Image 1 (cartoon, rainbow, N blue to C red):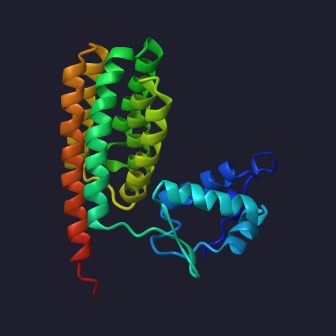
Image 2 (image 1 turned 45 degrees about the vertical axis):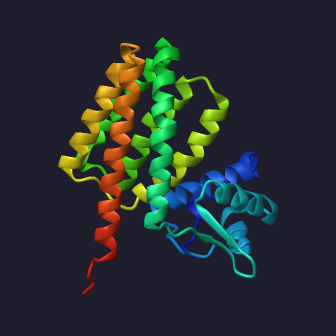
Length: 229
């Protein structure tokens, strides 16, 4: 395991939430790779905390699908399969199309302003950003839509689903052409939310998630069959 000292948890945040936040960032950034062991003792030493918040954080990340806990083996960063990708994007299609429809009805001026800012960041990152920059910019936009519904339950569920997506998306960058398509799709969703057109927002979000799913599966298949010299 690489040292995590630069992400040592501040004294005021040495809770399971603080540890989970650090580990989540390390997974998203690729510093903690799929299949990598996550020994409690080493994590506690690296982060400057006791083992109790580490153990609780690992359970949290397990619930998000980022960590696998196995008896007699301990915790490891979860390795994502093609079935996982199909399942998670199917869930996103249902949940996010619903969220977009509801957000179109309930969004406030403040919600819309935040979405405009998130869209602007997406466009700045574009196809030239790193995989992590693209994934986190995309996550921010989608999270704001679930936030705009005002439903705490939906926000919690979507947070788990989107965290799992980002853990995979952070491993590959969109090329310029694919990035341009995604940006245009986001722009259409934003326009529908601005006009409070709930049916259109729902339809466009479903189409966007389906498009993202096809690209994710294509990348997974190409990665599986890549020949390493």
